[in-house]
Amino acid sequence: MSAGTLDPRGVRFTAALTSVILALGLVTASWRVLAAQTVLFAMCAFIGMRLNPWGYVYRQAVQPRLSPVAEAEREDPAPVRFSQGVGFVFTLVATVAYAAGWTSPGLVANALALVAALLNAAFGYCLGCQMYLVLRRFAPAGLSTTDTR
Image 1 (tube, rainbow, N blue to C red):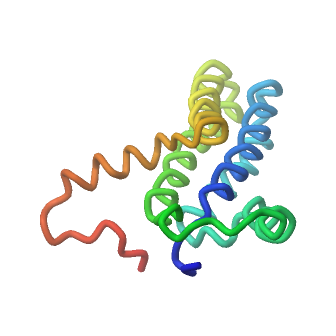
Image 2: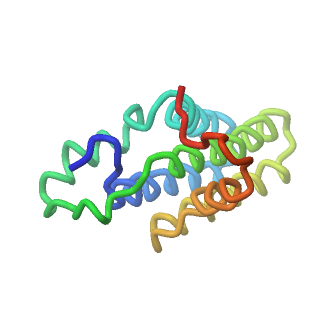
């Protein structure tokens, strides 16, 4: 198991728990709920994936009960970190909108983040990861898109 790659089952587990938080935010229109998720997205996108508490729960409680994932099935963390950044932007917009009393824009941003998280949790389809791959195709030659410094 490579230390630099991710178990895709853990990514989906994390997306499922994120979906619950985002659904709670959508039902309550609470800026506090969205602020908590925004902080989680920020920690994962800008500091490191290992800071995700749902990933920790997966690694400690779920992963040991599963068969090991094949090396070829493991995922590069760069697209996942990028998707966390995209989630951060949407939840930040929702948090600010809810806090300012702009419920409609908050609901839209919250709902879009929820749809993306549900797609990942239910089908393993990561919209942010797909965005990362598209943007990477258009990056100038020689520009590193995986440099995490």
